[in-house]
Length: 477
Image (cartoon, rainbow, N blue to C red; front, side):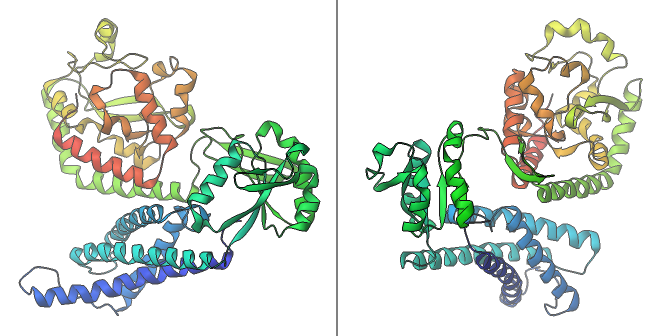
């Protein structure tokens, strides 16, 4: 159930589909005009907008755009959003969708499309989708200010949660919510005014209030400890078919979602403490596979050169077997290019006093065990490249917390173990925000947990983008 009726959701999806399809048409004619105005500029060869493959691409792209908007929550709880939030979603969807479109064209060889056209399409799509959202916001605001498409709500509770709810809908009048009044547990407060509205009765008066006032929904704002006091409210709403929403502190500050199910007649609430966006996680996995496969194939000559340099510069194997712990503390084997002399692990105990990290992780920037070739590889993070095979296998992701060694995990504090609640990655927030400057393992883990708590595909893209430039600068050790 959403704050907007189902036909509004269908209208929004249709508008996004049509706008994305029109973006191709506008981009095509703009691209043709640019070729005529600047005939000497290499904008690419001719393309046929109305050719079979192009029409299929347009339909595919428009469908993907609607799916991405849905994954971003653009079609749910629309009364609790803003134009700024909508434009942020538009930017994410347009950029991510264009990347998916490029990858699809590259992998499936669907036909010739100039890269200049794709860039032009991205800009036009951003502009048209932003204009569409602005237009829909304007229309919705006009309609709601005229008294249409509004909901009347009854608030059960008069505490801080109720105050915050009232402030929110007053600040955003375009939400289209009107408060009929309040209910409170204390009969002495009935008929008093609070937050500009009357207390219409106690929780026991719910039947009378629902009969006396045209209420679309009841918003329960009492503390979790007092939910037992509003059972009569819940029963009355069930009898009269009135929608109920609960603004509760029960889930805690770090809960990322919950699901309510009926299993063999038992009401079960499942609480997740990491983001659980199944469709988005599928896209993340798809991005891992596509990027790791392309990079592994493209950098095969570099792998050969690095392997030869390691083999001929120092005795020992080319690869270092990295036994680590990953998702849900499950062990797996990964690989790096060997950067240390043979038998380096046996020398570790002697170097413990030189450890530059506090906590269970061992790290020395000027490690005497590192070979000259290894120092170069570490500087530009080239030793990490074989981990792309672990990404392709599914043991790791491109972006995620650093995997833990078994000897490290036994020294983790309880709160630090939550970093293993998702698949580990080659790069993450710690690498693009602090990297060599972070000397406290607690700070490192806090960045990993911040990534988990705020995860999105857009965040992954930003981290990958920043990682590329950090690697180019050669700040590793």
